[in-house]
Image (tube, rainbow, N blue to C red; front, side, top):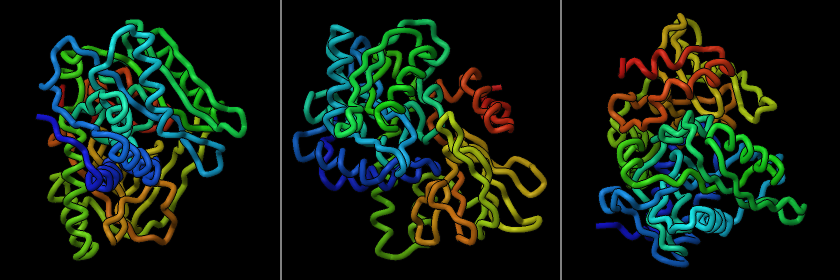
Length: 365
């Protein structure tokens, strides 16, 4: 049966989620705030998809935006709850559970507070095991769907009168940018609940077990921390099934923030023929060797770790720092329908100027 999430699970979710954040930002403290609020106010429950009936409704709880410390964002835990309530009202039926679009420093915990307050289950499934730059990559096959969907967004900087509540209906591709615009107007970060789908659809299209994978990883990290950095790195490799692809000093960082709210560029680790290049679009999307040969590609997990085993986001990296590059190959992780959907790749390939789809979809060729 389900597992009641308790206080000790919060840090595990944040730490495991931070590895799966794949260099993406997010805020560990925001994750802790959501988690502790949830376990203190109620009993959030993690359930497997098999505990829900086929016809029950599940939606995706997400945070939208690229909140920098420079933007006036404000998101309160209650915003996630209100977003779920607005979606239920628009749907005219109760939601049985919530999934998340991706793991991350806070996103692994996005469904916990609504679960504690409203009783929606935290469903052990994700739109993508790891974090990614576009919502489509976590939309479990809805990106190109003409089907009418409901999406809601709630939040904003109250002091600057930026608080917004929004309910939109339409094809996912057309309404997702509306939520992104709302995130921008609200101060850069907004809570959302979107795309109610039947449990039967989620079962066959989501990456199942994604939340418990993050929790197990976090538990292994916490257990290893007493012993030191190399033990933490070993525990991460052992628990994920991944390996250290490369290690070295960051010799170049060329990442720029675009007007579309993406961090895009490259980070070079090491020098000469031993160097590798990380390709960034918010998260690490690919790794090339010194000759331009591809070593790892999304949807594989690619993460930079400090010598202490701490997952570092792109924003934390500076030239001269020593990092370890973790690679968890895509053939050993559960993959969702959205990362195997050819339509989600052109926008990312165009923005980055590299090939991704050819490698990402090779397993299905």
